[in-house]
Image (cartoon, rainbow over all chains, first blue to last red; front, side):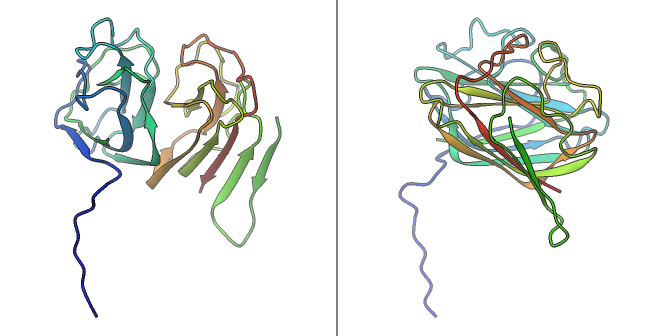
Length: 130
Length: 124
């Protein structure tokens, strides 16, 4: 038996973003780059025992997310997570944001586009991208 | 639109293959509650146009209002791309999974993708 330990030179996801108390306020430019590729998501709603929550990702050309309004702007990505649970999602080839655009996020208790209500319990979001 | 459901006694998993998912809703494919493990979207026929996959878990029967019902899940697949959306621990469906595919994420959009979008759902 021979063991080998190497540092991966080109890992699939080189960026990890974590928000430990996500809410309906827009967090701009989560990957700090244009046209990021989203590889994996962990939406942890286990501490929030009463509400289903929705992770919403947006994109535009402004790194501060100006002109994006949670509840009005159409998200490019929506993921539901029931109360007291965690959803994990993995996209081997990644979902690439539009060239020139930055990725932004928010979490609300309403499905779809509309809704600006923040969760009352703690919601953690981890995004892996490149 | 042609939907094939693979369902047999040798596995507890079921597979639904829709070879032309458009704005018309494919309603309640899980026949109630279930767990989705993967969704494969083939948008290669739409070379330059993204397609938006919309999933619903809020109605068992009776239909989705295609330009008014808010989605539970929404994923944009780039033009010319195939993407596997994998849920290793499962995606819990409480009421029944319905899905459709349109040209944009706007609530009122009811435009079919120009070319066929093939969607394969594996669930239990």
